[in-house]
Image 1 (cartoon, rainbow, N blue to C red):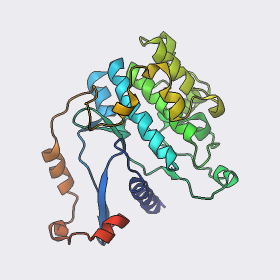
Image 2: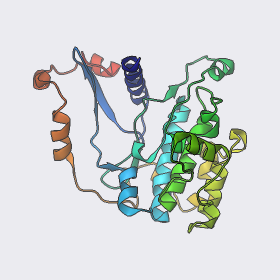
Image 3: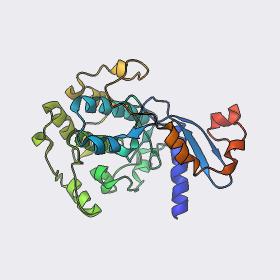
Amino acid sequence: DRQRGRSHRLATERKVLFSCNSPFVVTTYFAFEDSQRLYLVMECLCSDCKHLLQERGVIPEAQAVSLAADVVLALEHLHAVGICHRDLKPENLLLTADGRAKLADFGLSHVAAKGISDDELARDPSIVGTPFYMAPEAIQGRARGFEAACDWWSFGVILYEFLTGFPPFQGQKVAEIYRSILTLSCIAPIHKCSVSAEAADLVSRLLVLQPHHRLVGAARVTAHPFFRGVCWPKHANPGGEAAEGPQHPSVLGSLDSIMGQGLPSSLGTQPRASAAQLHQGVAH
């Protein structure tokens, strides 16, 4: 039922967040629960790429390169530890104060079980994601439980949206969006948009119907000429020289006031979590 689905998504999110250790995945400090709710205590971030697109319309290509590089590094880490996000979209890319992107919202993610066979993975028929960003094989129920190619398709859709201001596949109804994706009926072919030849080529290599013909994997994506100007060792270290990106004012105060409305009145008297509980990710 719906409540069970919410509980499953929250459990998945917690499992993923405590499995990750990357500057390009939102940091979760610890979790605790009361008799009714489970709480995840995460870093406070300023905005997300959806709002950035709403504010600016189109993201300048130099900035899009930087944000896209952040996403590539996030996916590289996730896939290395056996996690497929399955719901990659601009609103799940949170922004730090200096404009770096961090991946969030892992409720629909798939965590590959150790020792599971390819045949068992292939039996996962779940169709999950947000229609505009779903890969063709996900729409058709042909995606395996851990299918990294789906994430790279979604990355291609996001990159297209960064550069043009709108997703490539449109429709008034979900079925129409799916039809546009399955027939590659792009609202505006990327080669006809005001983007560089390198950007157009990368998007076209990512938005390929057949996953085995798609450009997938961080090693192949980072080698593409679109990222020619990225110094990957430096970019992978956000604590070093700041990357080009939007500057945002601190919103800690407003977020604290919003979050406080949903917290139990006893929160201020909650005991501090022990080291063992923090290691487990949950404090009771």
